[in-house]
Image 1 (cartoon, protein in one colour):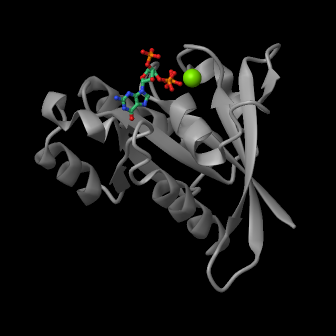
Image 2 (cartoon, rainbow, N blue to C red):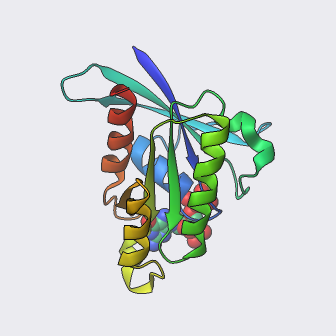
Image 3 (cartoon, helix red, strand yellow):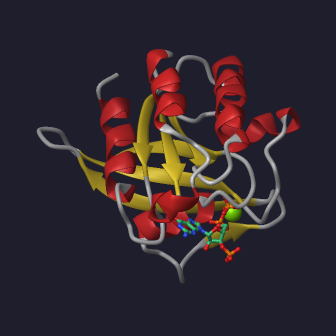
Length: 166
Ligand code: G3D
Ligand code: MG
């Protein structure tokens, strides 16, 4: 079976770990590589008209912010899920910086953006025009909620299909 590494990237407390846990439903069997501060989950994904692939999902453990010194985290990634928190506009600006880091470290790999916490839409600082601006730069964006599950499978499956399409 084909196995692909994907990484979650984004500021602290935006829901990276919650999204991963919601998607992989492996809350109690997480493998913690605490020494390197990375948590790894995996999930089999059926791609329509293709084989099943195993997504190996890397998530930075704890509340550590990703910095350029953590390039090993990204090495070997086939794709990246960039995450922002709709309630904090600055986390969406981080997404553009992180995207550039991915381009520098990994190269031109599939990336999808999850603007998370859509269940708190009334508290969102991110508005339609912010999203449209990023879409115009070619980014694929979904509004997700790790709390309700909205678009969580969609966003991971979308990334998985982009990996297969390469
Ligand atoms: P991180 O891994 O990006 O640092 P976490 O973020 O997954 O640890 O989530 C940070 C906090 O945001 C957690 O709250 C978590 O429950 C909450 N959260 C994550 N995703 C969502 C979401 O989609 N909707 C809402 N409403 N909350 C979310 P606590 O209070 O445990 O710190
Ligand atoms: Mg986390």
